[in-house]
Length: 232
Image (spheres, helix red, strand yellow):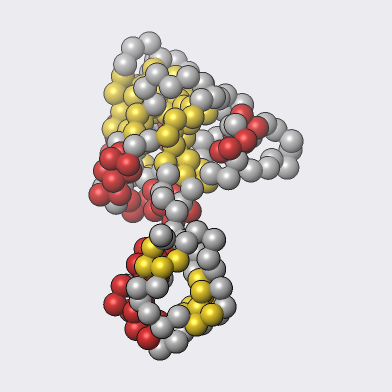
């Protein structure tokens, strides 16, 4: 039977239900190039709905995925140097997903992917304050300068917010950040005399990598997405 046209317009995000009804009453809405004057007119998936001759695109359900990024892959669609990208690893049906932020070539672990470009942008804004946790394997075991990173540090004129850093054995550190600036963990730890040999992200917001195998992708639940949105 389809859906009432006023509801279709409202669900698309173009206008409220009341505003959609007013547009219809004013003769601004067409279905398959025919003007419709009734808000209870039913439309189906094959109908073309326009407002002022502009096609109304139905809003798709937001999807969010966890991906275990392998070593030596670029977080980009195409690398000018011909290096392997995450899209060379992902199955074909996920090629159109947008990545949420980036992990550099040598960094492994949790990378979020989504079909919603606006969500991807919001989740990467420093102002969002979303927690990211990394496990860093560093050179040596002299951690005497890490308090500089814990207090907040300026490197090459760029100010980095305080990091929560815990020693977890050997040359390994658990690093928690909320800004997500480019190469933030590597730059700050190097400035503290702890050059990074391996970097692995295990958490982004309320999403943990868990036991997701390398190179595999997993769709996240609507509950997880809703919790993420609430944190913004």
